[in-house]
Amino acid sequence: EVQLVESGGGLVQAGGSLRLSCAASGFALDDYAIAWFRQAPGKEREGVSCISKSVGSAYYVDSVKGRFTISSDNAKNTVYLQMNSLKPEDTAVYYCAAVENIGMGFPGWFEYHYWGQGTQVHVSS
Image (cartoon, rainbow, N blue to C red):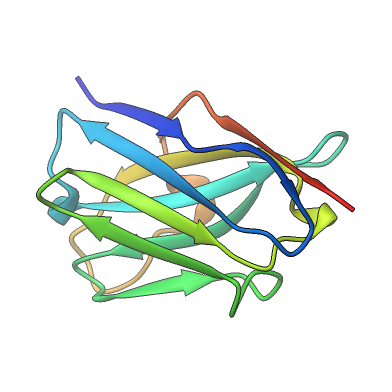
């Protein structure tokens, strides 16, 4: 059974940092793309970053580029999202998601179908 469990959210001041973790079980990271999404109050869920071994790189949306870093630890079967220089507009529930991916391109955001329960991030001004 595929399971994703996020942790690491919390309250931080603007300019601060947090590291989110996504512990995966029931599958090996090598065969999946893992993404971080977020959903702010009153807004639609948006993809933020993704990583895939088959692609060999990571992707970031413009709003987090240069501030967020996604990484994976295969030994721990865990994906991380290091978030630096946080802004109040980063406040949201952050979810990790997974989809099988052995191709050369990143899956579309709509293709992710395994989801964690989410972790709240609140950035105060």
